[in-house]
Length: 133
Image 1 (tube, rainbow, N blue to C red):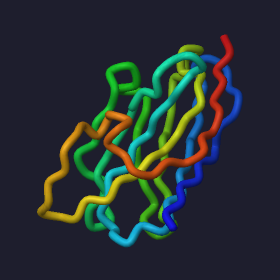
Image 2 (image 1 turned 45 degrees about the horizontal axis):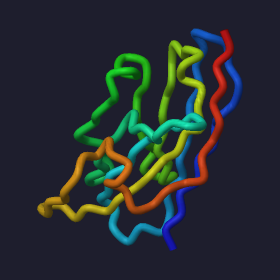
Image 3 (image 1 turned 90 degrees about the horizontal axis):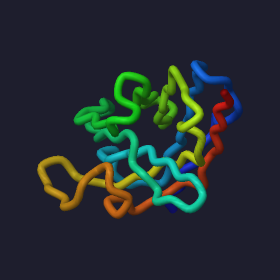
């Protein structure tokens, strides 16, 4: 059974930093896409960061324009953790943050866009991030 579990959310002031963690378990293939999304009430869930985990490395990183230069996706392959390091946080970053995963075997192709919600098969329950001014 595939499970994703986010942690690390909390409250921070403008300009502060947080690091979110996503523990991924149950995937039969070590090669997969991982994405970070966020959602505020009444709005669509938006993709903000994604990367492809291949041979214990993250490649093909992509970021939404709103977080470029401030957020970084990384991983600890030993612990099966994917991180989202968030810096220079703004009140508009306040949201529920989710991680998501989709397997892709090397040499195969998949359709869709990795920052698109529909691209992913598995989701965590989310962790709240609140940035106060």
